[in-house]
Length: 158
Image 1: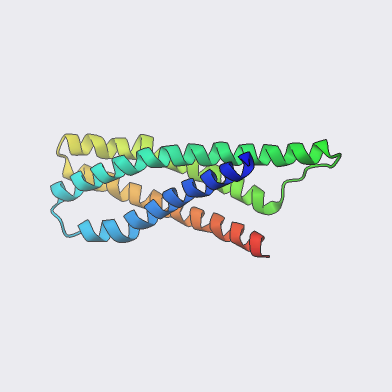
Image 2 (image 1 turned 120 degrees about the vertical axis):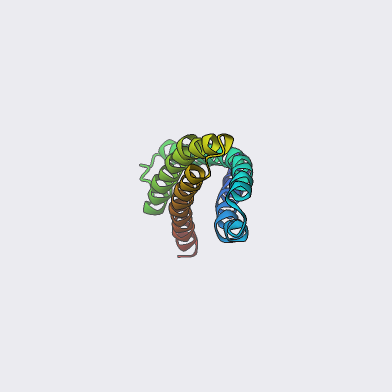
């Protein structure tokens, strides 16, 4: 029961994170592109601020639940007399997941702070540059997230 609950939370956190990146990148960003810089940057700042709070929770929940599930499986294998060797797909998921969390932390605690300062100071060129960097790193994280999903789905159906 605990494993199923944690796996569900794990997947839901990933849905929020990846789904939010898809929404922001492919739907929100193009829709606000025609707005004047002050309006666009304030709107994106507000939306991303809310989204990044949710992603912080989702990223930590994903990490913690993933580590717990791995540990539980490893413990069960060892307790039954076996030798635990993490499957390649799990290794790929773990490595890419850790990379995604690291990238998110850079986005949230470095790049978003630049956007925050620029919007507060009405420095629209600096805000636009910060937003462009955020977009680049979100694109990278989105690509990694999709790759994790592909690895996971191929392992489950293969």
